[in-house]
Image (cartoon, rainbow, N blue to C red; front, side, top):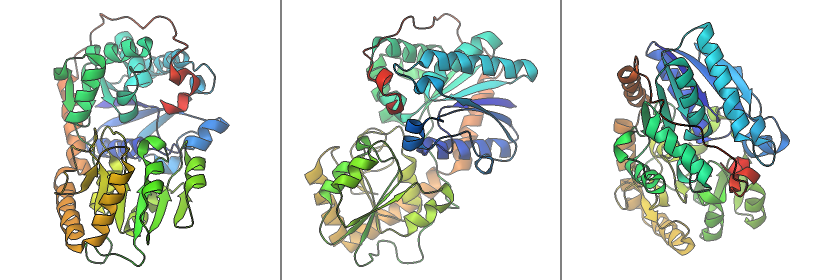
Length: 402
């Protein structure tokens, strides 16, 4: 099977979706598919500072995957020109298909790649599979009527729509008014061969205990709440970069260490160097970092939020508090640090579940099944590109937040 996979987040962009895409592409090749990655990327100062910029580096592309890199020019101007980026993706995909035909098109993100893939599918007669990811599912469509129309078009007209969790699906359905039956739930996954516990008892603490935040340094991930909630007598390690890195540094004290960008090959050792993982996120599609922490044997504190509650259950395999509740976060951390039996029980349950339910071979096989169901079919052509530009959309002025 020949697959064209289109994404706006791939290495060196620092994102959970870069991890997701790299692992998925590797597994699809292992299943016998030929894969072409069409990857958008940032090469401007602002985009590089927030995400990491430049085309996909050769050492991060799985063997057997062809790469076509497209600069996201529409994200570098104000107001953002998403329409120009969509047109460039369509031209690229249609041209590649003319040279060597694909069997299926797959977009990672509903907008802008999903709309672009849907348009390319109409020109090529190919099936269009779209994965709705965290950011575009939570916010795109709540920002302006143009983007709401775009997301509804993608969900209603694609051959298959994949989403990471039931709670996330329900949020997207609530935002867009789409039919929940349009979605196929395929959860996230992690590499349980790379992410493994440290060689010490599960739930053990160093002196002082080390708390870890690993991911995009963004207030919507709760990192500023964590700095405010930090209990006495602990160390905090913040691993990653993002739009609120400077603000986080300004609010932190001497207890906090900022690692900055951590190469993916170093991520397992970063988890193993910690005692407790903390993800006070406001919402997720399905959190890769939570799965990595579970596989690393860490007791975890997170939030009772969309995309989290589908893999973490309060008191069973993690502790949850309300998003934005700084006092609740501090109370959960204080309780977990004081109770060794609780730490061991939560970490043990989480480790068993991630190994059984969230491995990459399982996820890739599920997506391959979807490809095989839609190959030979064509998506609906009874739709139109959204007309006009809404300059009041918050993402037109801050494209990196999309």
